[in-house]
Amino acid sequence: MPGQLDSALVRLFDDAGLFPPARLPMAEALAAHARALDGPHHGVVGPFLCPVGRLAELDACVAAGAARPPALGLIGHDGPVDWGRAFAAPGLGQVEAPLGVPMPEPPGNVLRYLELPHHGDVGAALDAVQAAGARAKVRCGGLTPEAVPRPAWLAAVLVGCAARGLPLKATAGLHQPYHRAGGPDGVRHGFVNLLAAAAAAAGGATVVDVTAILTYEESAAAALTSRVQGARRLLASIGTCSIDEPLAALAERGLL
Image (cartoon, rainbow, N blue to C red; front, side, top):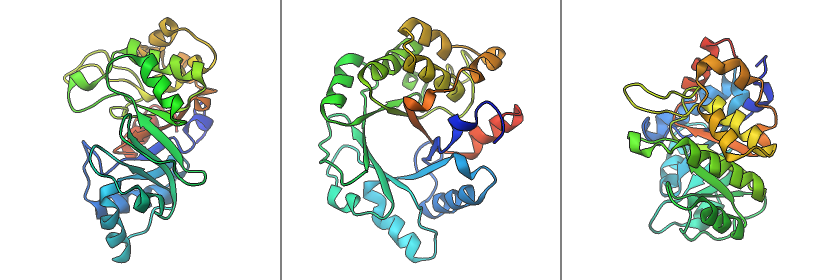
């Protein structure tokens, strides 16, 4: 992975192939994850993400011959969650749930992420994450234009996390490197923008400055890629339902 993005891309992409919009069947998602780990850009691949409620299905696929992911992240949504089963899963490295969903302290070095409400008071939500001794998770997109957060709100999350020393992960809608202000599917955030914005926030930038970085379009690509160093001190990872898509977009631009 030669280039300015080298260190920023290491294990950046958590594999969310089971989740929308891909929604791959379990066997297909496991096979795609194994291919990514065997591929030329295996260094960008993070843990395989799975709902807690589908652990039995994952185990059944492994028993039938699928490769077990060496690193696993488990996600609990609203409703009953068997955290005891989750915490015993082989390869478990992180657990996630929406803020407000009860989650016991995970064992050992397992990381815990709490997802922020999509709108609302950023400071209060981040204070609650910090009080729980967890890390933050933020959604940057969704299946409708209304699910995409405003750049200023996302910038406030980044700056607020930096001020509290809270690492965060991002998910949803981050398939392309650069911000797009228009198009048939509306505004879309870019993951290179997000890396540069995280680096700026970690360095003490204001919400106004971070908002500006989040809205740079591809014409400012050189300025963005030169500013990603230090991003991973704040931005731990990005969940994506397709690791191939962001890699293809980077390769098209000569960034891989």
